[in-house]
Length: 105
Ligand code: HEC
Image 1 (tube, rainbow, N blue to C red):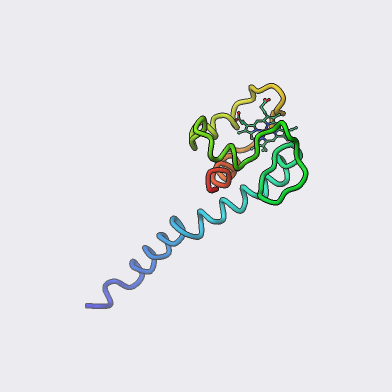
Image 2: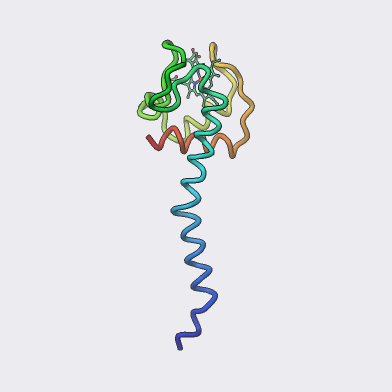
């Protein structure tokens, strides 16, 4: 009887690990890498960053802001519409990673 489970169970466990743990962590790390590369010139993107502009909200502030949930943040990053903030051509995957990183704080 025990044998019936075999491959299928292993597959399910592997899938769960990908969906819950590893996958999410990798996204956030990638988001942080993108943030440090593309956003840190103006935004303070991580605690301890010393350079950045005073007049630009930090990613910690954006993460806590009630104006942005995951959806609206992604929409903001996908739409080029703001004044002083440059238009960054980000892919949907990059946006998802950035949102995961910003909202993880
Ligand atoms: C050249 C400077 C600059 C860069 C680079 C930059 N931003 Fe911004 N960003 C701004 C400024 C300035 C604002 C303030 C809003 C405005 O005046 O348009 C802003 C606002 C924002 C806001 C809205 C905050 C709010 O409360 O309205 C988000 C979200 C944001 N930036 C995310 C990002 C992300 C993510 C990146 C990197 C992919 C990035 N920014 C790169 C200058 C920049």
